[in-house]
Length: 225
Image (cartoon, rainbow, N blue to C red; front, top):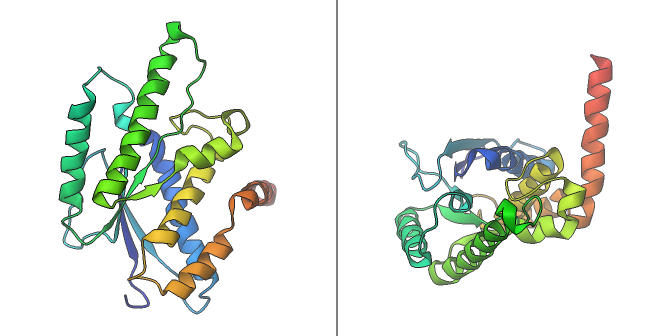
């Protein structure tokens, strides 16, 4: 990849996930540029609806997907869902892009059967298991939102499976950027540089400090204005 060529990312996700994906792209760009100060790392992010395929003349380097669209709506047989997503990923894998599948945070507001949340949690669990199965069978990468968000907890993040709230979107974005640096861009960025960028991005325990720093910057900007 030439020094000024952007990393092209196509994300086929729900509306509620798009801010997290955008944050992930920004963190990816910032972490690479931070260890390669001689030039920036632009990223072209295109967004599509779930299960859409990328268009345009220049194929993406990275495709980000999610099965969140399957959580709500009418019940379908598990075999139909598996077949639908297997066919979709088979098409994506015919191209040159690394394909990532984001797991779904297994938390719904309340757990009363009358609210329907038990069924919601059951669906999420099945979809996350399917994500692992597809990853093993097809070789797609996993961005494990469920594991990382559960590390912090729904109460602390003030969120649920739809990724509402600033804290949750930042944590999910950080998770995506870390997954891409670990698995997705060997042909775009030198492996040694990727390791340095992952260090610059930080680990899970660094996220609270990063969030506090961003909050201070936002307050300072508001005060200056």
